Length: 203
Image (cartoon, rainbow, N blue to C red; front, side, top):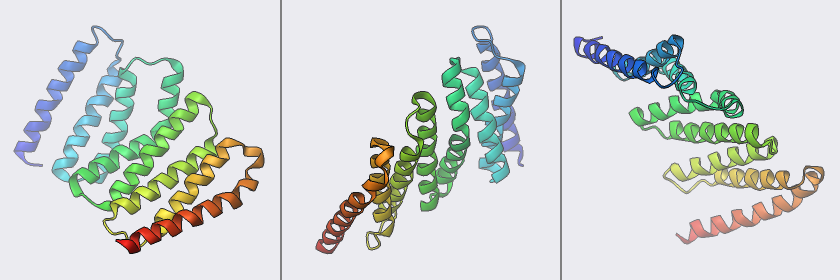
């Protein structure tokens, strides 16, 4: 690590420490939370200098949990955000990777983890059907992957994404008659696929 990067990290360390200690005057922030938050942000910054994947992962994890403990939340919201960490932390990782490397696959994974994180959060808060929303999230991610690909010649991901979205929506409507919805969903899916192919050929 260069002298410049060391100086930047040291300077940011003292600034963060000062800000967090100021916040202790109005918020009940523990010393452990301060240490974890500073360590997380420092590791994220260190990643930009050293390109260390381990620093990025640990930094994302520490920062998420540090901020989660700084913000004052009720028990239900805290539990929901804590359970969503399994998806939100990888989303932070892929967000930073995409911002620095600009690879399509990273954006696709970012969308998927964000959607799954939001899905987990809403499920914990509302108790809505998990399987249906999970299918919808995966379907949207596949559709976005097709759109972000830059080429519209191959529609298999879009087709599968639309099909999963339809099945997910129908699953949420009435789980007892879930299987009876598969055939109508398949017919709707085929119709949409044909329309998409016709549109692509028209272009």
